Image 1 (spheres, rainbow, N blue to C red):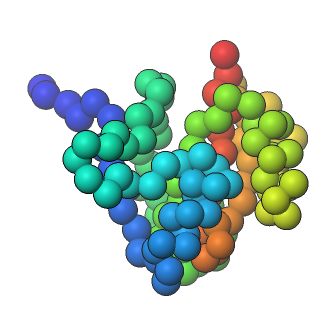
Image 2 (cartoon, rainbow, N blue to C red):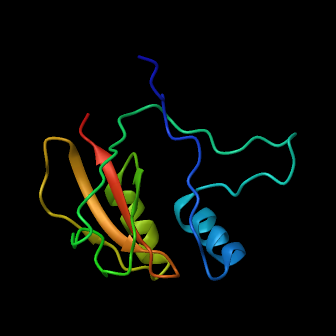
Amino acid sequence: MEKVIDIGDLFFRARDPAALGRGYRDQLGVPLVPSNYQEEGWRQEAGPTAFAPLPETSDYFGDANNAGMVNFRVRSLDAMAAQLRSASISVGVDPERYPTGRFARLNDAEGNPIQLWEPER
């Protein structure tokens, strides 16, 4: 069977897409979509990706109005959390180490939940 190999794009609605995009770029290092085909877009590093539809009653994303959550892999959860906190962004680092690594949670400027993941090496 032929299988998809990675996530190619992630699209979601925003009240102010330009400002939210700048926030992801400036706070998390996620580049904006190029304005032309000569510029290269974001290239991800290879690694595992979870694809998990959850029950509509799940509280995993926090607020019941949130339809989903994006999870970003990071090299150093502690360094990323410190960077975000220095920009006055609240980050909750889970104190537990899981077999798959460490996790943290935050919300973007529009309240969308974000999970950061430092995979176990």
